[in-house]
Image 1: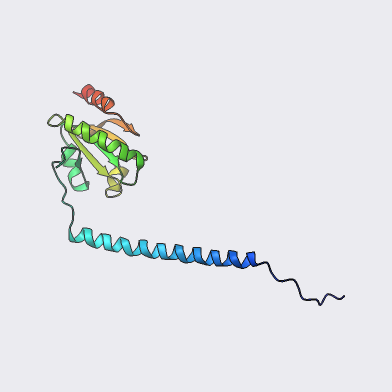
Image 2: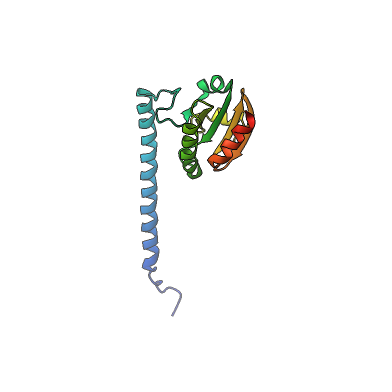
Length: 163
């Protein structure tokens, strides 16, 4: 026979992979569109109802700090500030420790939190490269630094050494 014979049909597996690939691409495109739509809606909602910056924590825990309140808050006395982010797993572990520390130290020192996603310029100013990072300020100057989850006893000891 000559080389003019029809070739064997392509395996069906190739077609199946092609359809799976197309479905996966469509699912990814749908997900991206949903995320892109969600961001402006969240921005509109937060612009319509901005969360006020509190000077006293309603839960008795650490006080949220932002760029507008940070410098005046740490200017005098001893302040412990937790730099964190909502998406950070170790930060979620550190959060309750900081809140408990804040309740136990109420009236003695200031305890605050800075969300690095909302106030990245503060994180840049203090060279925060990993979170959670806790800075201890005395009269506006950095007097201590802890990176990673830090237990309450370590924080208490660090603060007592500054008094």
